[in-house]
Length: 136
Image (tube, rainbow, N blue to C red; front, side, top):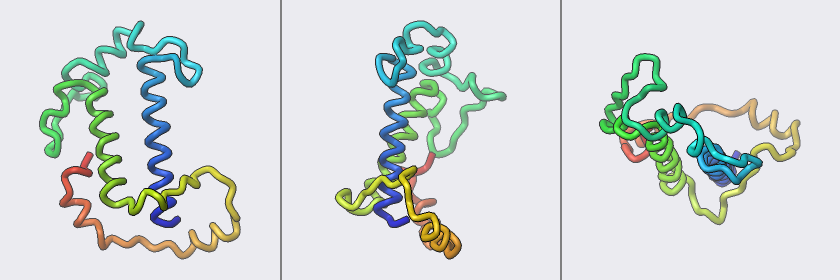
């Protein structure tokens, strides 16, 4: 995949995540009539209240986001989506080159040929490790 295909696909997935999140929480979207915000006490506790009740040990510690457990899973999901957006803006290349090809039919033989020659390039690992805005 090219940089534009990767960025476009990631952007498409982020858009779907945002829509799914909104549908589950608020409803009236993606064939969900009433979102869990309106009827589920457990959902609201996990999503909006302080702490990490969804974790087995309840430990909210995260050195990159020291206050991450202060506001529930909803705030963590917003932080994640903002991190993805930051990655796209910082490393995704020009927006006019973004192409969402994920899940679209492709020439399988050509894709196999490319996939068989993929090698991991770790040259940017230190850059990503040092950029706190993209940590999650």
